[in-house]
Length: 185
Image (cartoon, rainbow, N blue to C red; front, side, top):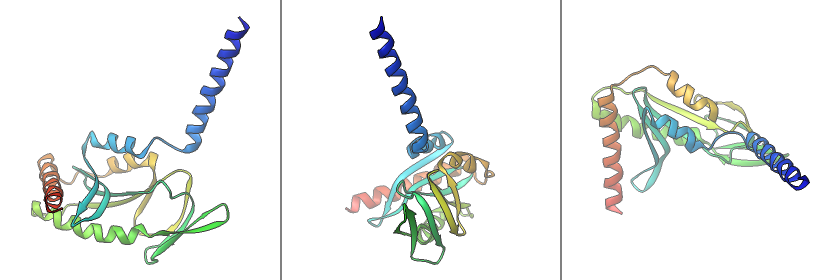
């Protein structure tokens, strides 16, 4: 009887500890949020064109094209602006340089503008930097920054700009560009 009680107590402690650790770690995995978005559109991961990554995550829906930047290693306080080539990440009194994602996203925006020409009209392109809730942004940038929890609601809050058929055309265009690039390799 005591053994059952002790085992039950230990299992309860372990369960509560795991729940608390996951809560501390932050949030669900980023892929979980992307799966939720995929219900209303199409998510592409690691889009390579001309043998270089143009975007880690691209989400296409009736709201437009979303160029989503997420780096799980962006933690602590983040300092930077649009023009700097590197940002500073301060963790436990250590300053670490990290590449400026805004500069990368500017190039990606031009690529997506070319891709959206397939429709013959301007498609809204939204840049979004997602950070863990363990990161504290001290940034002066023109791109929207949100936590992982806010990602889905921020995307869904945008107004519809294109039709479902146009989403399919854009998705097919990206798929064909990806497959053309893979064929060349």
